[in-house]
Amino acid sequence: MKKSKVLTEIYDSLFKSFGKQYWWPGDTAFEVVIGAILTQNTNWTNVEKAIENLKAAKVFTPKKLHEIDIKKLAELIKPSGYFNVKAKRLKHFIEWLFSNYNGSLSKLFKQDYTTLREELLSVNGIGRETADSIILYAAEKPTFVVDAYTKRVLVRHALITEDYDYEAIKAVFEDNLPKNAPHYNEYHALIVRVGKYYCKPKMQCEECPLENVHRKNAEVAKENKSGKSRK
Image (cartoon, rainbow, N blue to C red; front, side):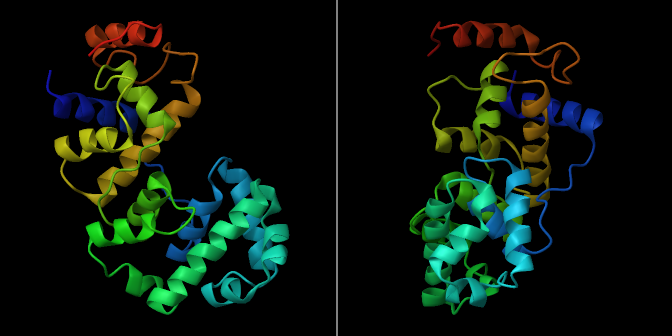
């Protein structure tokens, strides 16, 4: 079965079960960017608390974050975990934004997708998942975001094998689906939803919307997970 057909079946099954997810949960592009950096290695509830602290302290603007002392910044974002590291990452990004775009996200987002991704990846502390989250959810350009949920779902439905890296998984979506930012947005959000509630490290296939999608090869995927290799 063609990957494009299976990917469409997965999306349709998830959307039918879960409906629209309304991602990313940020009020502005700036909030999405800050959230994408803060959400590394933590959950969104903790990120929301950190963002609330920044807003309460009246420093939730590029200019204010550029001016704030890094120790004060770390204290404010403490709920997000790894706060000293994340304070440095936020500072790196904000300083880079001011050095290159006078602190303007709109100027940054005018770059074409390839240039934008290369530039974001050049910033200390911004990896591929964070960069793609910024590009998709803040800049609203069509790039697919890959995370642990994405890989788990695709392996278990035999669309990829365990040895696929980030770029290879990303290409599965981008080579087999129309390049459409709203669709990529909804698709990734739905994968996160099914990954949290059903497609966990220990599979809970009963009642999962994907239980009967691509089942023949999904059985092979289960064997892969138990240690057998497929090339």
